[in-house]
Image 1 (cartoon, rainbow, N blue to C red):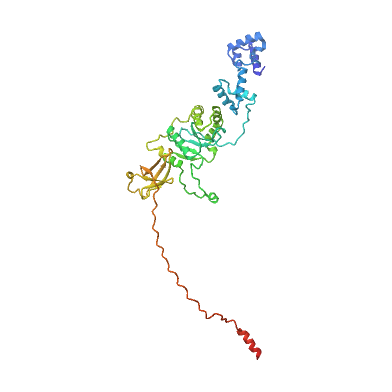
Image 2 (tube, rainbow, N blue to C red):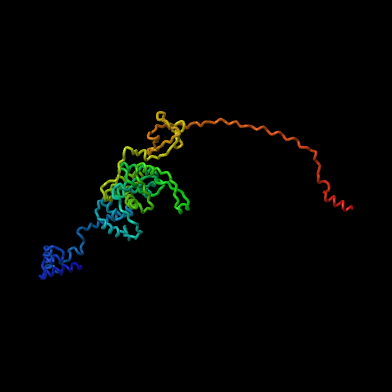
Amino acid sequence: MTQAERDRLVALKKAKKKLITQKQAAEEIGVTERQVRRLLRKLRDKGDRAVIHQLRGRPSNRKLAADVEQRAKVILSAPLYRGFGPTLAAEYLAKKHDIEVSKETLRRWMAEAGLWEARQRRVVEMHQWRERRSRCGELVQWDTSDHDWLEGRGERIYLISMIDDATSRLLARFVRHDTSEENRLLLGSYLERYGRPLAFYTDKAGMFQVAVKSKRQEQREGLDRQQMPPTQIARALGELGILWIPAHSPQAKGRVERQFQTAQDRLVKGMRVAGVRTLEEANIYLENEYLPWWNKTLIVMPASAEDAHRPLGKEHNLAALLSHVEKRQVTNDYTIRWDGKFYQIDRRDVRAGMRKAWVRVEQRLDGSLAVRFQDHYLRVRRCAQPMRELHPAQAVSVKPPKPAAPPKSEWMNNFSLRSGLSLRQAARISNARD
């Protein structure tokens, strides 16, 4: 008998002996007067056992059958459900196998079968908590994960994700390569679906900013770095009027990083059960299963109901804005060179001041090419490589040959000034004779 049951028994016996009223006993026990009268009748018939629950020591009436428990353990023991936690396993048992069981009951079953081991949470380094933005579209976090999403069943793929900071609304897409083109494709999908957010929050990858090489001494001295030209994504965001904010650490963009942790658990296991093996199948599962579940279950209400997204106007040509843009100079014959090929500007589009001027060349995401001069697009066609003008050979002045040297005189032959005695030697001989 528990202490609460002992206290209840004491109150009932006081009411039985008329030491307190039934109303006072009800207030002391925490039940109604009618329940007190029932307990007093049970106390008269069964004695002190009246305060003990009738199901004490007996199985619950709501307990699931043993065959259901055994069936669930067999299903979760299959390699298909390797690594599933109780929460995710309960969802798949209900959806795939018609077994309705709470996650806590399933946690106990899995622990008994050795399929789940409770782990004690580790104390991790705490970072300063940042409040969510108040409006949807005020800040969108953008990143890519190179996890083994198909677990070796297919090619290596990447997941590009955009998550709203205020609501956690998610837009994602699997790609083969984490390139600027693939990121611009997802950017176009986001803009067409939701509009222009106020800012994007990303890491400092090369597709967002051009790295500047500087010496260590310059870094220590804090010298100003030279201004580098923008990347294609940075240029597009600038033309769209969207602010780009770089994150200085992974923890700074923790919302998208935690989203990847969830995806690496639930999304990977979901694609395993669905038998996903290709990029196309992965994107179908992502669009039809995972993203609807996320945006229905995990989104939150923002502090403000106002949407900060701005609509796309007539001046926003997404095909042009999301292109690979460079400048080229028009030659004297009104041709431009792009990717090693020559393009001729149509005669109808030739204008004054175009020769030697710079034009904007846009390599669209669909592979087409567009050329713009000032505010007008030009019609161009592929042409053959122009023949280079051959410059006439310059006349080379031929110097006349040098005249032959006259023959050398031979009058000094066999004549040597050193054949006789030197002056000193002659003087010594002369002195010796004297």
